[in-house]
Image (cartoon, rainbow, N blue to C red; front, side, top):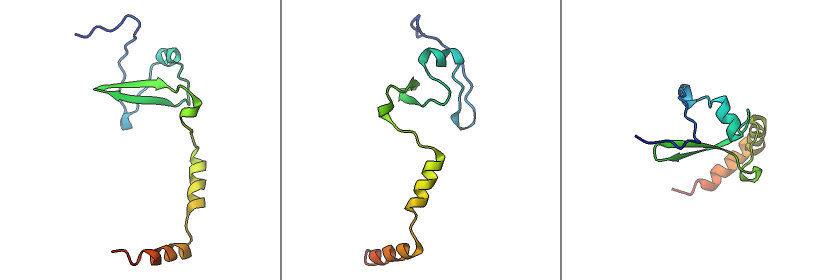
Length: 92
């Protein structure tokens, strides 16, 4: 039997569809995780560790609208697709 340190908290959570869980409010508050935050999940053996982000520099979050705009901006015209196809015709 593994003994948990006295400073740790343990709660049972239910795993929902797509692996969704609810982190108990008291734990989120103590860890400094707020609604809408991004957290890091790390698999260590058979344990999953969830940590609040340390610094803003570690990552950037983009909206769905930004991603859609990038896809539109990067879309090739039919003429460009044909030209690229011609360039690769020689490759087996």
